[in-house]
Image 1 (tube, helix red, strand yellow):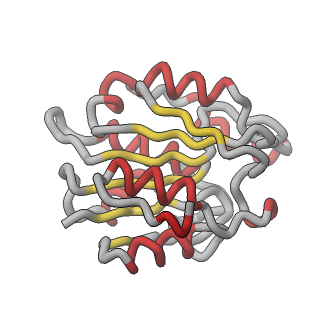
Image 2: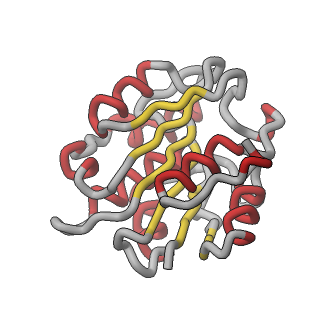
Length: 197
């Protein structure tokens, strides 16, 4: 049975932004979906988020699909890095994923620093998922465009531009994200609902 885990962003929770909408849409289609509340979301740490995410995942085979927003994308990549050789999930949809950020306060920079500077084994990550879809906006104040190019190069990811969405957050009034749903359904091999395109 296909299942989806949605990982929210920094300072958010499972009820933030477009996450409840996406979870509801998937559940209506009979897809087992969870959106856990990640720990210490105001000061996210790799050593807390990655093991917590691993604990939420029952089966990490080809029927598992992961969706992340912002730092949630990083948590997903670092979770994939921990999977044993030969393990492979179905795919990922990464919304506003990054390895470097812009526009942060000094306090935010201190939180982001380990996420930006702890190396990722890209070769290992790229082998652990069937497909990588990266969704970006052209006016994201935090995620420079170079992030999209890096993920495309390192993960052979397909880039999708959803123009004018900012950081895909509540502060940008993004409470539904049809492009993420449709990309996810596509990599799951399921029909796209024309009503939500």
